[in-house]
Image (cartoon, rainbow, N blue to C red; front, side):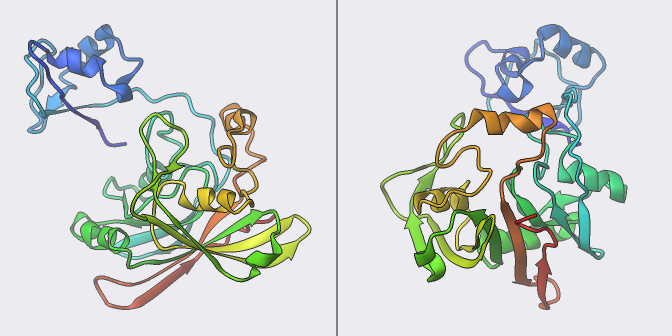
Length: 293
């Protein structure tokens, strides 16, 4: 796991300790906890030099330290490697496993699992999937190629297909395009549609009807937070197992925290396709995870 980077937002007469104690990602650390780390030389600046807690804080300076690992229920699903070469590794991420450490999810993440399995800290995600979403996820293995693969996603040069299970709406057998503006603010569990220039576009098609519901092909043209989940809910066909859309369901959201993984969000990143930025070769990777079990 990488060290936590804290950018100091200093006011007049603030110390490094003041800024660290006010940092949300370090919530739970007391001044005594920080003092112990500082005494061991474990709080350092960008040059790796030890930082004193009573030093004046410099605006926008960075300091680094490691957080204690939280207690996490183990995610009882494998992280399957679909493809690997010298530059990239592509995995089939299971439901409930976060892409990378954040908040309460640290060791139970795809990034930490891969680093442990491959024995290298150079593994880095080229993009992300929500913790509740399963499917194809691409990581880079060398720092010198990381930016090239990340640019594929940032510049929307990757074709993505998702599969979702939701109630049947027969008229969606003909593709419907949903286009609106989605924004998500820190501290708000849900994203929301707001007036303004369109920044979220999805094509949605009912492709199969089963006893469990309809299987939908979802093709996002943009990558806003919770975009597909919101767009499905807006069409009146909220994805099965969604704890946030169309309404918040605390009972469902809390199940994984108690070790209950029986009701996943039925959304799978089914495939990724792109022209490789190094070789120019066309690549396509397909998930083996079913949307209906």
